[in-house]
Length: 106
Image 1 (tube, rainbow, N blue to C red):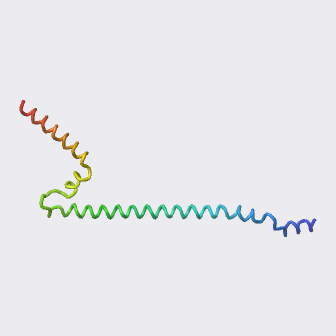
Image 2 (cartoon, rainbow, N blue to C red; image 1 turned 90 degrees about the horizontal axis):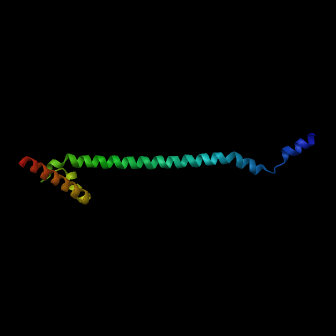
């Protein structure tokens, strides 16, 4: 009996399976940790870029008083960025103005 236990204890067959079973959750855990940290780093960079863009936009808006046409830069850029939407809004505003003018006349 003692000899059988000693032979079982010294037998190395199947040892790789035990090592893989023990180390696989550790490897997967570290892989997930690396993925989470890279996503957090990317999110941090995106938020930093957004904050920088907001600060630059605010600085430009605060300095609009020096412009020649006395309108904020954002208002001057809207027609360039969204021409079809601005045209639609302008048509809507014009229609409201015409309707309001017609009501005053009658």
